[in-house]
Length: 298
Image (tube, rainbow, N blue to C red; front, top):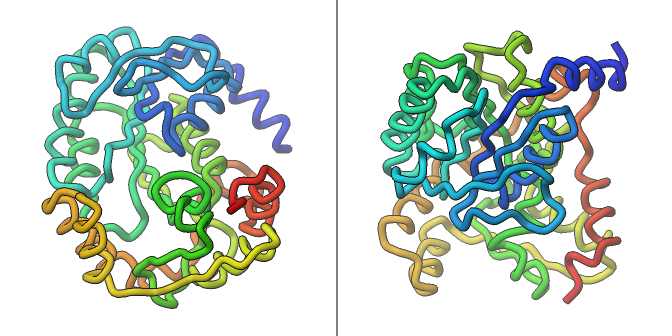
């Protein structure tokens, strides 16, 4: 089946579905909202402010906060499916309890499908994954590798623009995945007839790169020098503490970098090709597109 035919079939099967998208202003959430809307869904775009970036989606906006359960019911009521992305991280302390409580309430309110965004190779994510599996919903867990857009959006962008990425990844290899591929996979498996209910799906980009390689490609595409400076996880945690990051979050992130950036994720996953019927987007294309948009100008 061609990609166009697959998209047409998906649009027909998803038409009239109302999908709650948590984190709809974030790196992945806003792209999930756009992809689900393009597939014919009514998107309920959820964020802590209840607002959506201009032009991001054309559907409903609703306030939702993982740390304020009083916002959950209005967000869930009337939805057919929900995309769940816990912040700050699916493996963070308390994620399992929060994801479990929300998932059970979703089932009580008639939400049939739940798709949880998880992280490939992150043991800390197991409580949240288990909570979704035990919720009683038709669930799918999507485990993604490191997002390419982490270098063009979010907290690492300032360093990239300043010409230096200081990060505790050593020389380990990672199959960077484009956030648009994550969103397309999430949207595809949200369909009730997708065949992925009750499954864990692993997705990655098409090739392995070190962070030094990735920064080098960005530097070449942007036409300016950007250096990669590897540090230890403990050094990085100390720097975060110096910037005022709470001690509990620093402890979690330090452990996460020590255990998740140790090389055990240096392999490719075939989920994008299996689910979408095409190869994942390449990092070189991502770097070129973002450079042309001026993302890394100093």
